[in-house]
Image (cartoon, rainbow, N blue to C red):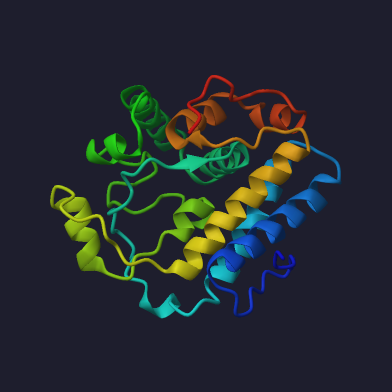
Length: 240
């Protein structure tokens, strides 16, 4: 029997598959309820913020919060293939336009396009081995969109800085990184519940490679409005 959803994002003492199922149900319910209202150009951002804020709250209620080794300026896993949904991409594009000078947004867009072309036929391992850095890192290797970073980024929390360095900066000699499993299960569940509810509502909730979908979100000022009407805005982007 699946754990019951809770729109207040309080996971209690759930673990493993039960925790993931709870996060899925909670995200699915929250997304479905929001989509019962009018769908406008703001819908994508409203949906994404509700899920990321809720998932973050649940992640931070876990037992490993104080053990996380991830820190500002550590780009260890920021050359992994990142998959996000259209609402995630539209939220990132909206934040970039509002918070950054036009020249910086243009630079991010150009880097994202270069990454998308370079990585078009790569799988996860090939992408990581190619050291293709996330276009959203700034010159100090900090995440430039940290307040609105996707759930997939929030859910990946290493418990060992040394293990990360061995994995990501020593020719991938080790791929064993101890993770905050509580945050990871919530992130996986929240992402799947979010996408399932979006698809059930007749909207595009598929997973796309970040670089390609971000370019489209930035290139089309009407992308959020068109997506909310059910149009296939991202059909030419790289699905993963």
